[in-house]
Image (cartoon, rainbow, N blue to C red):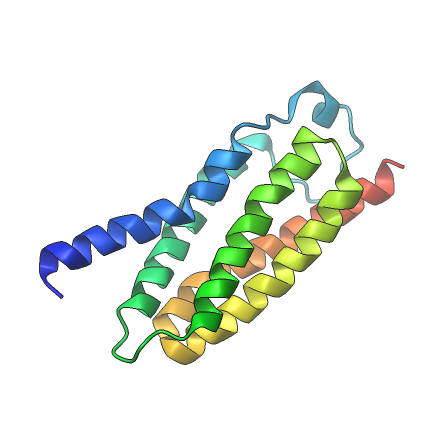
Length: 155
């Protein structure tokens, strides 16, 4: 693969990884979210637009590393990666768009499972790719706690 082809693939991988963020940006928290009772350790709002782009970029680089590994790419890691992107984007629609923390909680638990599986498969294929997904895994775990606590505190 030529250097130009590699660069274009890297840009495409990072671009695809930002798709859930583009979906999520359509659903603003607004007054509804501000009125909710929040759990301990809820970060200030300014943290989210800093953390997510870093995580999306790392996810894209991880995907690139998997795609450029020497062996043919098995379908499972790519299917899991695509699935977790869909679940990631759906969460914003469920939580902020529909204002349904209960449905968002189901989604994020599935997302967490998908990220765990994706990280494991990426790690087996290329350790660096798996390592790049670890911050995302930790963040989704933390977000699962926040979502569950919000659901619990706001019946």
